[in-house]
Length: 123
Image 1 (cartoon, rainbow, N blue to C red):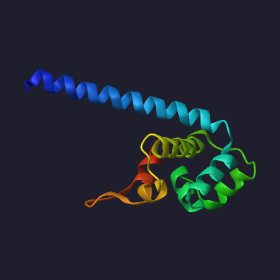
Image 2: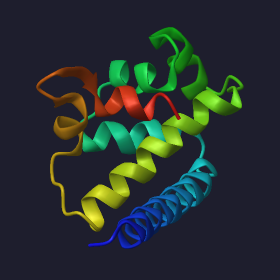
Image 3: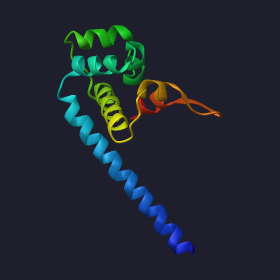
């Protein structure tokens, strides 16, 4: 493979990743309309603990409880919860991953102490 072909392939891969991320963000935006309490319930039904949801949102458990009782949320933190719901939906549907919480709670690699939940929390 020539250098130009390799570069074109890398550009194509990045474009594909960008499109997937855009689609995931769009899905998360639609899911956010359900409200935070409904999103937390969906995640709980999938097997996520409130602790994991709070960690992903970047808030404490008491703050998450307040949000679920109707307290106003901050945009970025609540969007992370919606992103987690969207990611689970894609993983369970397109990728056929049954245990999404288990996959996201595990380290992403043997040399990396970072989990999938940590990465979702960075969005």
